[in-house]
Image (cartoon, rainbow, N blue to C red; front, top):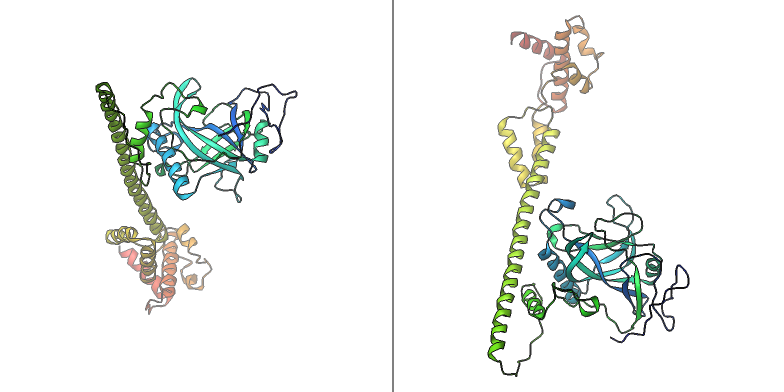
Length: 410
């Protein structure tokens, strides 16, 4: 990659910005405030790529609704999935201004693209955390706002922890993010129109050379990277050329040590994949239980006022497992074939919209209050049976008298 010469001279004013495509583009410090001072590359396509920006770190189980510990292995998987999607599917996630909000009618403004590149340790408020670093490809006008210090915070969005994917990244101006990384500021700008937005898999043990390798990176990281790549679905490694150099006894020992380390990390990654698969099965089981419980509750609410024997409740549970459509058919058929229980109180009766001035109740107005309540309840039941087109031969008055006598006998 050919880079233009850069300088680190402080700007003459609080803010200095060089328009995209201007000649002799130099270092831009932007707003005078401490921050990450990340390196940016002007690719000449109306975008600027900011390199090695931390976007997400470890999250303990229960925080942000995480169903399990979001650890180093999970973050490695996030990077691997993003790499495969971009390399094979030509897809990468969006950058946007502000977070997506469920109740908003419009989406947040598009700002560019992000591509996870590596996993390394990051000193987050004095505590070292495994962290995903990404390249952010920003629209020129958004990049200008970043250099002015108007979008100082970076925050990831994950729709489903079980997916192992970082769905998008938000640039924030006033909302304090969960991960309080160094402010998103620009240190220098390099111009390189041949630079590509690439998905090269980087070792989880450190950053690439231009991103300051940390002490965890060593000579055998390349071998570990290959071990991880072997266990990524769809990932392919380039064919290796045979080494014609004779292997000395000392080299054999080193190779055996490296192979053992490679096998260990490969086994760890395979175990992590198995753990994710088991959690996915558990999640689906919980979702099914929640869905069935919700359907049963809705059926009970729909059949409020109807007598529900244990056998009926068993059928409701059975049909709920079969699906919403099957359960709805059963509930509708039950309501058409079974009358509601008579109202037990005056309040329930009044909810049935039977007026005290109903002519059928004229003969019963002199009854004791308790007996009058029974009359009203019987009239409501009679109307319900008529609505259902049951073969009721008795008149309303006759039915009311019969019900009052029956309850006295009880």
